[in-house]
Image (cartoon, rainbow, N blue to C red; front, top):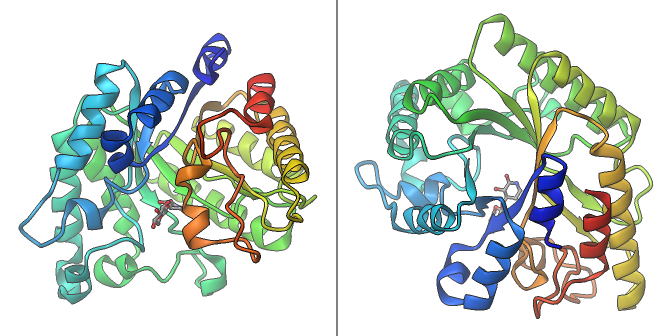
Length: 328
Ligand code: XIL
């Protein structure tokens, strides 16, 4: 059985982030993605830098292609993302601060408006909280803070709702899962933000937990995360696990050892987190080790290719796949 078949029996959407170039050029990859997924998200193709290369230019071809693929296979689609401090076009850093709100609003109207009625959800704001930046409200020193002021988050959610009233609107972030002080502070600051949004009746439907985890770290997740998820449910919000991958950076080179440890972490994590009824959707950040951002952006010290996803570089299922199937 596929992950999507197992997920369907439990009312859980399952899927992955998609490399749109591979989706077009690599048929076996496209087949694998379609066979396992009831929901997809573009790994990069719907970010600002991909969609909006110049102030008056939008490039929708890649995103349109992914959405057409999803629709032809009756797979739901998430949008990622409408507002982030990274992966922005160069021109954005050159606009006058007074123009930030108008530029953000225009982009969201254009992008969310284009796909209105066809999206399962949007990551409206990504990674806006960073307690280490020292602000009382927990906001990250993002270019958006400078360009549009601290209300940019509210502006983004309101604009997204107006542009696409049927998409679920999501706040997405990382570094939330751990049993450590830094993650605790992040969870606290995110809850503060969510309360602020709720109090002001800002439209938000879900919280995305990225779930970039490390195998072999006993404090990678735990009861603190579960308390946080329960609080989110108490605010009538859904939880999406949006970018799960489990790196083996801290493990020795032996492949069988690495695969067993990664699979064990998938199993323990899902066995814990899927006990929370607010969790309605689970996406891994990629599906095959052939295309994982970790190889290029966070390589192992010995530079061996990562074994972080359910399928290997030849699209064969790994112990992590079996673990996911059992634990979903
Ligand atoms: C990453 C992609 O995987 C990379 O290909 C790209 O170079 C940078 O972005 N959190 C997020 C994702 O919200 O958008 C990031 O994706 C991974 C971390």
